[in-house]
Image 1 (cartoon, rainbow, N blue to C red):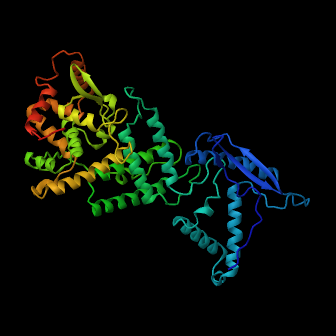
Image 2 (image 1 turned 135 degrees about the vertical axis):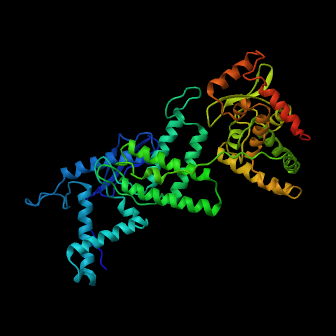
Length: 478
């Protein structure tokens, strides 16, 4: 099969490249030994996919103006010897037509079908190649309009949403709440879910719909595919419903963002069904004392300290990773961890046991984050590290107490909440950081003022002292 080589415009393959020293996008090309350069105004300081899309839009308009100015005047026989097009879309269609006619002349099947049928067959062939990623490089050269270039993969839309989340996180200020603010913990969850989405449907080919990058019908297909793959993975890997719900929540947020920012023409009519989450009833699982002591006995000194943080403070892995030296304070004569709960934003002032404080002083950093996991200050590294260490410890403990293998790191928090609930249910939300913000602030204020009066008859510090006595963990914090 022969391939027709088109005589293309000298700027056909010129694309914007990010110029790091100047922090802007530029286009460079050569013609008849001469160098040409265009510095683009759009996308300055943004080297991400978002900046690339904006810069490409500006370059598409500039390139179209150059082509119109150099259009061939065939009647007079002058010009530059190339075919002129009104838009990049016209040029792309022309190229497809020339290639289709060449293929049709070469293949036997062309003698048995009409020209229109042959053209439809070629279009089907092209779309199939794009959907599998085989023709991604070729399809990337076309653009639908001067202001909205074609994106090659669905992951380029998720990258735009990720950039918006990063910007929202940097704009979020502690103690100053605005609609749309996002905590570090919530941002991390979205990033995990988007990375998973990219791995599943990120390579899906997308085509513009009018002035939009994606149609509602195509978005519905992508969401349906992603939901099915998530359900299959959840069943195969025995993931929890929370894992699935996080991904559906992120998918819904992504679709809403794309629609609100003019990238998606409309929300799919069935988006409620496509992103429906499982209803999960609260199911705390406190660890029986004999099992807890078996796990304690199987743990090394450092992991015992992380157990103390979870039991004393009611912290999950991500909360432990976010503790900084500045959060260790003396309030009303008591040594406390004072910070905001990452997930809820509720202010906390949890009294420290002496054993927990000894562990912090022995293993915690002098400044900044107290604990780094795998030398990384990220929530994911903390989750992974403490999960794997918990698995090893509980498997070791299960040799003496078989049920030890049934518990996870988060169950330390459940154990503390269950004990405090038995003393006074009004204190449990304060321990878990789920209290109404006004009540929590008042409680913290009373401790700071040394007032001696608590929000409820039994103070949280006394409840925690009773909990420590109940545990009676040997060599705690040694």
